[in-house]
Amino acid sequence: MENGVKAIATASVLLIFSALLFRLVRKHSLPLPPGPTGLPLVNNLFDVPKELPWVKYREWGQEYGCSDLIYLRALNTNFIVVNTARAASELFVKKSAIYSDRPLIHMMCSAGWANWNVALMPCNPRWKACRAQIHHTLGAEKTKQWRRKQEQASHALVQSLLDDPGDFWDRSRTAIGANILDVTYSIRVESKGDRWIELAELINRYANESLNTGQYLVDALPLLRFVPSWFPGAGFKRKAHHWYEDGQRLLHEPVEYVKMQVRIVTRGPLNLLDAEKQGTADECITQQLYSDMDDAQERQDREETEMTLKCSTAVLYGAGADTSLSTLCSFYLAMTLFPAIQERAYEDICAVVKEDRLPDFSDEIPYLRAIVKECLRWNPAVPLGVPHRVVEDDVAFGYRIPKGSIVSANNWAILHDETIYPDPFSFNPDRFMGPSPNPDPDAAFGWGRRMCPGRFFALDSLYIFMAVALACFKIEKSVDKDGNNHEPSDEYTTGFLSYPKPFGCRIEPRSPQVASMIRSLPSA
Picture 1: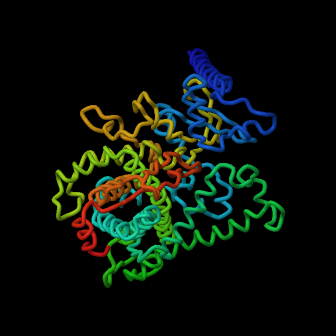
Picture 2: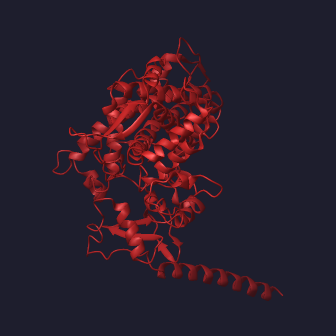
């Protein structure tokens, strides 16, 4: 009897061992996803497209038999491009436990940004705490508390466009940035060139630089991190020092401003925080998070709790300003190119809004919501998203994905998949209307655990900015000195963030009465 039990146990162990060995051998015998043939030593280093890479990756996917995944290897780093929604859902959503990490971007690590920039943080306890805080203040329902400030920002924008319609790009940038700073810190931006806007924009410029593939040699050759700053080719170290200092300013100075405004008083290093609102300071995200810190003090060290708060608020401008600006400029371009769509939207606004006021969030205009979605889908602001990193070997769709691979979602290709969005290169808001609309363009906000937590705020901002602009202005093609219409280009820039290439348009008030109403709006 005893021998029989031992035999069964031995057989079970051998069976389990054989199964594990089979899975291991099978996993490593599977092919890598298809991709271009590389060169010795450098592999696909010179195959990475320099212009509109998301378009080329989509073409490669079609060339290799509608492949969900494309593989490249640059030097000793594996890159996987995810070209389809089903593959993105399989990896980033269903397997989020292993696909939610971020790769080390050595230029940013040299500047210390991975410690505080939530979008670039690895999956660690601080990142999880930051995500929870952002969801707490900008979730689907919570974000509605900021609608009054968003309406004020939309009014400020049309007032500035009435005075200077030719500068719609910078005026929009200032309005979007001012709104985010107001909601996050109750900072009131007085004018274009405000110091807070300039600081936040500086940080955004640094981030966009470092996320552009191949911008800094240290990201391809990490060993350069260990050479002294005076060494030839180590100029990135001196630049990283400036990035560090400016990043620390963005991280700490706005929060210190809030603390000064609301006079947050500490009762002791290990006791609770007491926030007392003084003067005329408006409520903001930072103030709310401080008021919630009392409970957190029982669970965490005070210093780490406050650092988490600073990280949560510092990322909001970087994650929201440039992406919203890109989408808003796509809106100006679309309204210029497709006047029939603009007029239909204006008619829908007029059907629900009286002539003596501007649209607000009490006016739900479905066609305007559809225009917002189509602007996000037509040309997503971040075509390849922020890259993920897989933390263990995996198998997907019959291919092996090596541990440590950098995995990027080709959001542009996903949002131009004709099986999901028929006639994908046409600007057509009707695709999101009716009883059987196309799926919402959620890919524009990322995937899985790394999906943008501020997307509900962004959707509301874009909706009210577009609704108020269309209620006030007619957006038309610019006219040359001979009275001929100038046809704007529909081309977009290459880079981590993609914008419409510079174009001109006429932005004119719809009537003298509308111009008078704009001028009578209270200053935001």
